[in-house]
Length: 508
View 1: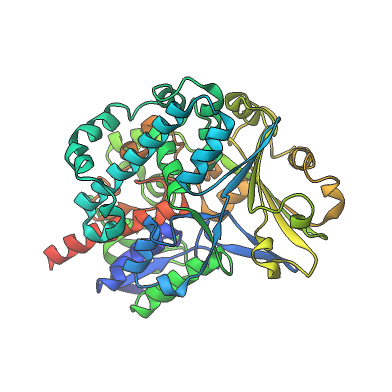
View 2: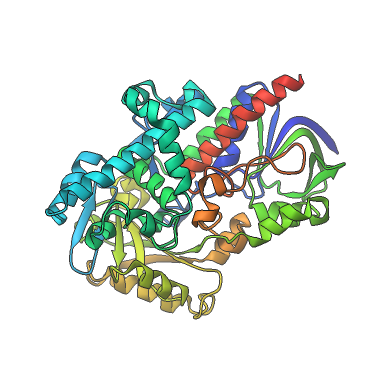
């Protein structure tokens, strides 16, 4: 059996769904092929008995109240179909010597930093000035290259004329410093170690410590977390994916579940369609792979059909760490027993490099703990709650997590029990989820949870481009620009759909 369409999207992660929706609304016939029984990829949820869990989403930055991703939802005309809880503080740091909440707005955060380092007001102001300047330059860049619809009018109005006039010079400054790590970049702003530690403590959201992560990528993350607030979707994260799917179908698109792609059809260096796992062929003008980039070019395509230089580049890129998670159903309300905020970062040490080195050995030194059931009580039976613990581990560790799952899980529980006594005694449901499980679910290379590792040479403009050397084959999602995160993947799909919309119009 053969079908013909305009656009095929491989994978229903949020980058793929976003690209599919944009093109469907532009009048293109779109088919999304998903190997799993649910759409959404990392933006999905599941149940264990009476407990509901999100697979990966903790919270989403800028998806409501005029944020960057909120504008995307408005452009897709689906904003009214989604409701969100505002998260504030977005995270609370549990450090060896203190607890510090990090709010989602610059004013409150500045006051917290002043409380922690009262003698370094000038340095604090310098950091905020740099953060806001970076954010404004991102908005100016988006408006130039993606059009007025990419930037909220009220946000653009806040940018001074002087800032707009100096944009070419500040843009050059960012470019010249784009290869710096976060540690290195922040040394230009402050010499105060305590201040640097607090500002960079959100590094787990991107999977590398400050001495390894891209300074500008972490700055982008910080400007989103601190400048746009974060939100949790009412219902659960699956609701977001479901709304995208419904909108695609309302625009005559199709989302085929349990329909994995076995091969991308390539002829004369041009993508012409796909072969599904059941043997069905679907031909199209455009093929978009939201799948893992390595999977795309080594499994779905015969590597000999792609330029050797491109395959070599792929082989030299490093995937990010993978998730080691504990999904817990508890017989008490965790919000009444020590964790009354949405999310916490537990750190064994303030030496973030040391923390990461320990993780590489297969031991737990830091983790995230979040409980969405305090926002959505129906995620658990009455009086009960859910708690999701997330650490991240490389594909290969000195102590192999494949054979040490229970020991690692117990280390995670022990770290949280410093604040929640006897947590282990209240576990009704426990599911361990490893990098291998993510690989099995999404075919993510080495179970990577952030796409490529967010090193300076693999972030932002150095990420893989969406256009590939094979004609009519494109990439979306966190393996390509702009980078890591569910909302960033949505933006990736939106950018691609706008670009392809123009190209397809020219062809017609």
